[in-house]
Structures are given as C-alpha cells and as structure tokens.
Length: 108
Length: 121
Image (tube, rainbow over all chains, first blue to last red; front, side, top):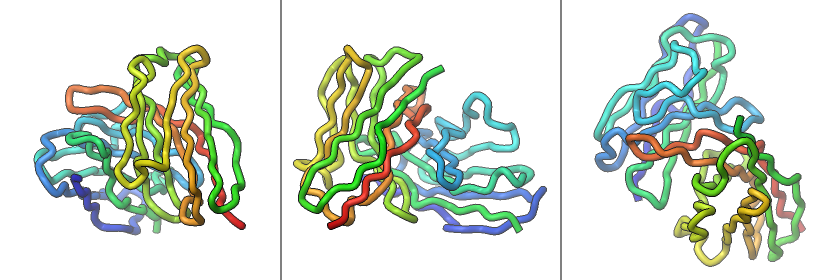
C-alpha cells in the first residue's frame, strides 16, 4: 500500500498569511493526488484534484503543486472560513485508496 | 446537482452488524463508483471499499475483508455498506462518496452527510 505523510499535523496562522501544507507519498504517484478540506462536523469537500486542478467553485486562493512523491497545498491568503483539517489522498495505486493523516489549520 | 443522502445514526451492540444506506439523486448512478470512507472520533479518513453499480463487483480494503459488504441497487440508486462483527473501535462516522474519474486517477467529488455508528454494550 502507498503511504501518505502530511506535515505539519497542525498549524496556526493569522488571517492574510500564506499557508503551505505538504504531502509525501511512499512511492511515486505521478499526479494522482487530491486534496480535501473538512470543516468541523462536516463531510470532506474536494478542493484540488490531479495535484493542481482546482475543483469548480473553490476559491482561487487555494492551489496545489507537485508530482512524483512530493506535493504542496497552498492557501495564498488565509481567511477565517479556512479553519479546517486538510487531507491529501492518492489514487495512483488502488485498492486501497489512501489518505494522509491530515493537517489541522487554526486561525490565530 | 448530485446529492448523496445517508441513513440515520445507529447504536449497535458489540458482535452485531450495521447496514448503512446511501441514496443518490441528480446524476447517473450506475456508472460512477460509490465508495465508503470512515472516520473514528478525532481521527483521519479511512477508505473501506467501493463499488461501480453497473458492474456490481465491490473492492475492499484488506483490513475489512470478510467483515464488510458493499452492494448497490440500481433500481433505487442506493448503495449499502454492511459491517459485521462490530467492536467498539468501529465507532465512527461512515461516509459514502462518489468517485469521479480525472486524467490523473479519480477523486471523491460528492459526499454523503455521514452516518454516526456507535458500538457500545
């Protein structure tokens, strides 16, 4: 199984800050990497698929990059509504689909 | 607009089984995979398995093999996930999610609202 490792596990940033979350795969997954946002008490929501394609309706302050084993989710200017946990997920080698452990983003 | 609506919360005894439903509307049910993902309290997301209704064959995560059954009823656009031999560690929110194929794999573009399953004696 492909293991997905996210860092950091949590972070605290101020409104307007640039936030970067990383995700590393245990082997190359090309661009088969998706990002989700999960707000407290809610179902996850797709933000970015295929490493860098923004899902329809997602604000442009979110962006994704990377290929192979290393990937990044960037929030260019953190907003209060971005309080959430973010997960990466690989679909290169399935089953199983595997997720990263999550990064909890808090607002200072 | 695609919607996935799940059945309500359940409380189960250890050793029993639970069956959660996921009814789809607003899209083509048969050709998209429906997957099940669970989340234990305070924990991350864990994929359990999935099924493409038009093919009818499910795939499961190794750790749930033999304990989980996923089926789909095309006539009602409803998928089901049954988990047996429940233990306390199965207490979690269970989500269904539709898989959308992209040029680089697939992603889960629509999710159900989640079903809390509590296993307690």
